[in-house]
Structures are given as structure tokens and as C-alpha cells.
Image 1 (cartoon, rainbow, N blue to C red):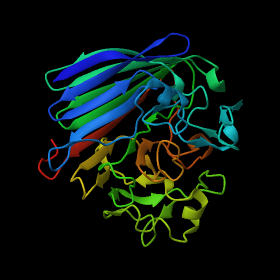
Image 2: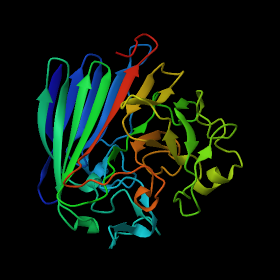
Image 3: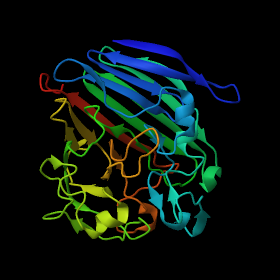
Image 4: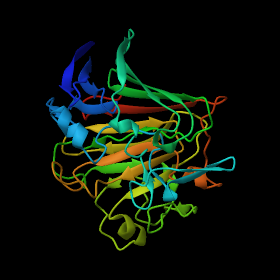
Length: 345
């Protein structure tokens, strides 16, 4: 096990941004302070050749100028809030409209654009880095002073992410990771085999806001209960796929007595690499990279973002709990990796 700390780059104001390579067994993970971002995950394929299985940039400018939230920690509220409006105990807050007509991923002052403070952490089983950020009351028009920490812990073949946030006022918090995965280095994710442990999705309207309904995935293009290729139905005439230009939907994870439940699996026949995702959140946003461009090709990688449902503060029937002085935000995501020659530990 090893941690390699270095300066990844400088912001225009001269601020140093550190990077950390976490090494444990066959896995290497690179984390940078800007956006508390996962910049790389390297794992050997079935032939023992190291593959970087997430999208990233070679320099800090790439992440600073990025518009796709590549690898970043997302907050205060991941996903969309309709019209940027939330009502907390009779007081309305108008958030930034940055995805017309909605608020998306915390807006321009979101966590993805912050430089987080950092320190290394380790035990006999893992190496890691703890990142902290303070979001002051009124930032992005959100109420409450918010203290956030993200712990990345790399075990032998398992990357754990633990989130904690505490606030001195009632405020909506929904934090997730926005890594784009491609398990074989190809130009497309369409042959990746995907499984999602969800019987329902929350369909969206033309503004990409959930209607409040729960739609059963059985016998639809959204049925990933059994593993199937991402591209199998992506060009179908399904109305929901037309609205979003491909998959970009919240899947309602099936209930489990276990807090850390199996949510999804992705597998590449080409590389033999498999990723199993476990999480504590009630939903997972599956995005098939429909609008990637520039440095990255359309649908070259996919996102699986554990989170509370989009627009939950405005939907009474959606599971959601505000962060408050009496209730911290605490959630976890585990990425477990294996290949054809090694079982998941």
C-alpha cells in the first residue's frame, strides 16, 4: 500500500492543487483536491494490462474548464431542481438556474468547482484521503453553513467513498460522485453489459424533471434487472429515451434490509473487467454519456450516480430527509472491481 502526494497544478490565483495516487495491490486511484475529483482508476484487465477505467484530464486546466462534471463530487444538491425553487417550512429559496429552466448539480458554486482541503488517511487495510469543504450560508442561495467531508478509501480491489455533511440550518443536501466509466478503453460504452437492481424508474417531463410517477421497468427499454448491453435498446422509439437523448434517468433501487445494498454491475467482455456498485442511497442516475463532446466522444463512457431522486424537495412522495442541526447527511458508495482472473474481495 502506498500514497503518492504531489502538486497537480496551480489555479490562476496561484493556489496549489494537490493530487494523490492511492495504491493498494493491483489498483491505483488518483484523487485531486479540485472538486474532490476522481481523476483516474487503474486496474489490470484479464491479460494483466493496466486500464484506466474512468474519464479524466492530464492537467488541472482540463478539470477547471470541464463542463461535464468529470469525476467530481457533486453538491449541494446532485441532479435537477425544478425552476431552481425549494420551499423550506414556508420560506422559498430561489437557486441559480444553470440548466434552463432548472438548477443542476449545485450550480456554478457547486462542490465540483471548489478546491477542497485534504489529508491522507490509512489503516492496515486501506490507504486513502480525506477532503473537506465549507459551504457558507447563502452560497448559491442555499440556506445554512455546511461542513462537508469526503473520505476515499482504497482497499484491495475496493474503493469506498463516505460522505458526511452537517449544517446549522435546515437545508437540502444530495451528494454523489460523477465519474464516467469505460471498462475497456474503447470509444463506446454501448457493448458494456449493465445490470441495475431497480424495478421502477421516475419518468421525466420535457424539462427533464420527474413527473412524480413510478414506472415499472418490466418489458420496457429500462429493464436492466438482468444484465444487457447498454446499446441494446438505446435507439428505440421509447418516448422517455427521445426526451433525454438516451439513458439519463433515475432508477429506484429495490428496497433491502441491508443499508449498503447492491445497486448495479457493469462488465466488459473485451477487457474482462467488472465493477459492482453498492450504496446506501435510494436511487441511482444512469447516464449513458449522450452529450459528451470535445475531448470525449458521445457515449464513450457512462455514469452511475447514487443519490436521492431528482427534485425530491418538491415531491412529497419521494424519499428525502433534509440535513439539519439534528440530522447529518451520511451516505456511502462502494466500487468493487474484478476481472476474469480475480474475484471481488
